[in-house]
Amino acid sequence: MKDIMRHFFIDKSELANPSPIITGSDAKHIKNVLRLKPGNEILLFDGEGGSMKLK
Image (cartoon, one colour):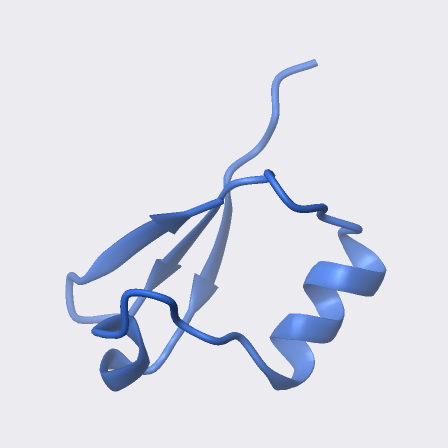
C-alpha cells in the first residue's frame, strides 16, 4: 500500500523556521488519530504558496 502525504496548514512565520513546531489540534491529530511516527513525511503549507516537506 502506498503511503499518503499528509498536508497541514501552518502560520507563515512558523514556516520560515527550519524546524517548525506543530501544536494544538494538529499535533493531537498527527499523534492520536493518524498515529504518524518519526520518519513519516508530512507537508506543511501556509496558504500563500509556501510549503515545506518534513520527516
